[in-house]
Length: 396
Image (cartoon, rainbow, N blue to C red):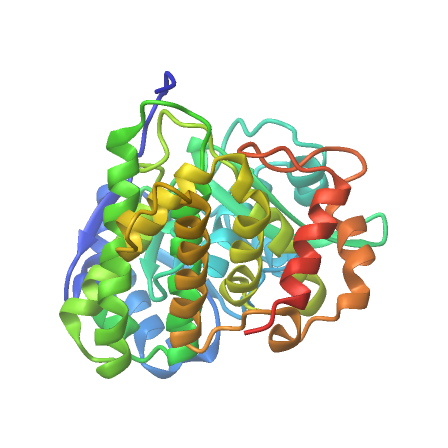
């Protein structure tokens, strides 16, 4: 196990109607001027935004709101949010939604405190983050885990290219996260499935590691994956199963608050490969990961076949073939694809709506000529091209 530091200051409020007390939580932090950021009209339609604003106003706090965050969040709305924060002297940002909304709030939290272009300054030039406006979250979509993470991903333009890039800092870890599983009842099967793939990918990016003696975090990863796999059929059968929704919501948070990643080298190549797909095609991040993650696993399996065989055995219950561990490892990847298929997730480029002819463009967007990808197995441009081709050509 590697040496590590682990700090997560997020206060979790989990349970039914937990969102009704958001105003008190913000006031307890001694904040006064709040910007509420949210996504589609859904949050307005169910009355959630009105309830949130009322709760804040009841504490005699000043509140502003900005809606319209889209999936694969863009810079444009962050710029607008930054202007509101500067003009109105906002001292707290509340994100009401899923990962795209939370990441927009986090980007605004750092962007509103500098005069430079936030995307160029932080996401392209990689300048260090030295201060940020405090952020809180009311989660509506269990998926990205951004409610408990130090990361943030935003899409923008740089040198006439679409870039999807991320930053990480403890300064953008939310102060609190309100998790009311009932707010996820109305998610479609597709939204739920995309979220499941996303949280599983967050775990797998940590699970496939070269670090030795990490049995504790191995078991945390495996336990979370098993729980997710057991829970999904219940939700597909009954979207209003509170217990199942509650388990899935907490699993999403634990998948990405780095509890299962401390003390071990992490990979993240699959996420970077997928980011180019969602930037180019505007597909759901989880759907893209359903295509890319198994392709990455198939390509890198020979690097440490026993780790893949362990995954197959412990997560999917596939009997270990000690004479031919490749057989077990390949069965694990097949089982993962079958699980994604059971949720009607795409498994190749065609099902995702991507074009194989665009692979050179995806590689250029990845900028792979200037750096390598991944840590479990170091990938160059040729390796990444091979993974895209596996994803493009996979046939059931």
